[in-house]
Amino acid sequence: MDGEEFRRWSHRAADWSADYLAGIGERPVRAPVEPGQVFRQIPDAPPEAGEPMEAIFADLDRVIMPGITHWQHPRFFAYFPANASPPSVLAEQVTAAIAAQCMLWQTSPAATELETRMLDWLRAMIGLPEGFSGVIQDSASSATLAALLTARERALGHTGNSDGLFGQKPLRVYASAQVHSSVDKAVRIAGFGDRNLVRIPTSGPLHGMDPAALRQAVEADIAAGLKPAAIVAALGGTSVGACDDIAAAASVARAHGIFLHVDAAWAGSAMICPEHRDLMRGADLADSFVFNPHKWLFTNFDCSAHFVRDPKALTDTLGIRPPFLRTLGQEGFVDYNEWSVPLGRRFRALKLWFVIRAYGVERLRGMIRDHIAWSRELAEAVAREPDFEVATGPVLSLFTFRYAPAGLSEEERDRLNARLLEAVNADGRIYLTQTSHAGRFVIRFQAGSTWTTREDVLSTLAVLRDLAPRVREAERR
Ligand code: PLP
Image (tube, rainbow, N blue to C red; front, top):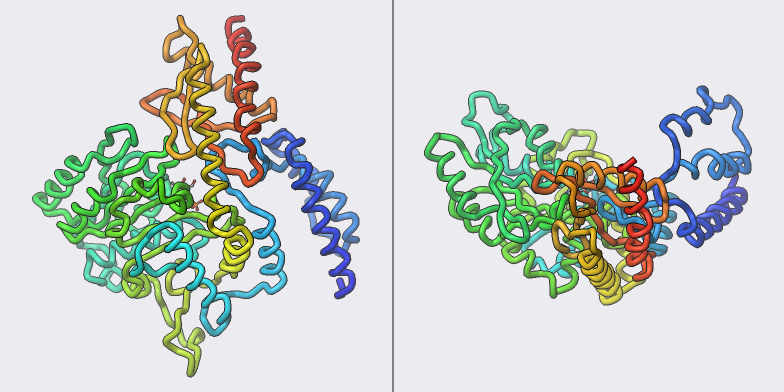
């Protein structure tokens, strides 16, 4: 493809993207395909000769698009959002054209320095104090892994990397059962071992760790000759939005020299609204804090903002400097590969720069405030419905509910809710997912798409009113 052809097809891609987003609301939210349907339509061998771009674009519409679940759909209420926005998409186009590999300052001076500046902006936007340094990780999972590896090294006086873990006292990690499974995964990869992930019971409306139980667990472990290494606090857990008392966790961490990591992957974006910052009280005392602009800050996946209090502890843990990566005469700058697990890094800061500048922080706050207000309005409406109950009240824009007609056992209701969820998602107007809470099957709702309106959110009620009695009737037969 020569330069002129590239220009022509870039315009076509831009038109395609604009048309896609303009019509996205007309599509079923979740892909209505059978497993294997897309795979079977793709030849089992690659073409020997290049094909015309016209044919490739035609197959994009014919083969691929029917198998897409539309995360940017205005009625995507499943999981957590992975929202994008026009300024972010534009930045991604430019980023792809530049195609920089941003492992070292020298390989990407502008990307590195923009990243440092953007993380300073984000830190201030969410109200974390100066004294935290930031890096963009590919995912919150990677940030949590980097944090737990640093915690491990700190607990071992930075001997774990050199000597391994054999013969060490078991290192303990404390978290509630409400933390994301990326914590469990990091515990495994970092070599703590599943049995050293100590689950602290939760209580209260925010399903946070019981601080007294946390303190007792740590003290009991010390008395038993084990070594507390890390506490992971949830700020907006995935299941029902659990929020730990970070200040209380920090006080236990400080008292015993334990590393404190805060996972705010989803809820962190809402911290740009000062009225929600009571949820992060104490985060200024953490060692590490992660949130994902790629979830709820209108910035394309992937973009995970990871802040650390002591960057040297992180680079001492992850930094390896082989001769082929030396940047002769230009040593001593920030080389972000030393802050993360992969060596290669995409230029991710540009999309943050485009998004934050194009919207301005006040507009971003307004969009998040709308999502929260509309979700709360919907939760109140669901609670008023005769056969429905709200299972867990809204945390920011997330709540869970349950179809609970009278005269059914809880087990029958579990089954009915699973059927209702299947029916809702097959219907295609909205997309919801489930979780388990207090041993029961509950349906989750969250709103966070860039394109969502109040009407989209409230349309959930119409879908439930329409489908729930039909599902009940089908179950009776
Ligand atoms: N933490 C929380 C609370 C999450 O909800 C998620 C994903 O939904 C993650 C971590 C993992 O995020 P990532 O996909 O960026 O690894």
